[in-house]
Image (cartoon, rainbow, N blue to C red; front, side, top):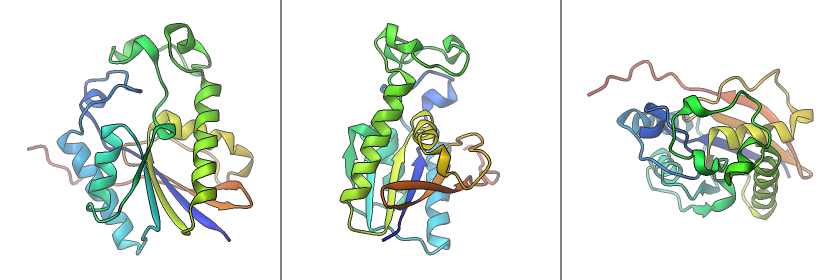
Length: 197
């Protein structure tokens, strides 16, 4: 049986807006972040997409995003394995302090995770969740760097050229069959109607 995974990034947070490094530390959604989650919810509704199961990172920004997207109408499980990259003592500091990409094992020295660790954690977590889920359509809300690293773990199965930039509430759509993930589509939304209050 083929299953479909919609892996989505959370909406904009206060730390995103202030250009702060945000991995395992957390910040609330901004008004724009709430709007982005609402737009993502409309996308699923208008496309007639419903979910048999839903999972979120334990970070508040991801849980809040999922609840807005589903209008609090879908029970979901909070899963630590879906959290963002742990940036160690760089958490909460200015993004100006980030090293050049790729980060590789830079943050390990500072109490964080290596790129391999993030990728392995996300790959193992999502594989187990998809194996154990009976339903065919699954929503997971996670984080930009964690999602990109999960996708790269399955690059041999991509059905597109590139990921592009992981925007807030952007969605990676995967098909899942025989324990293999196939990246089918990257879905980014139009937030141009947003008006700051």
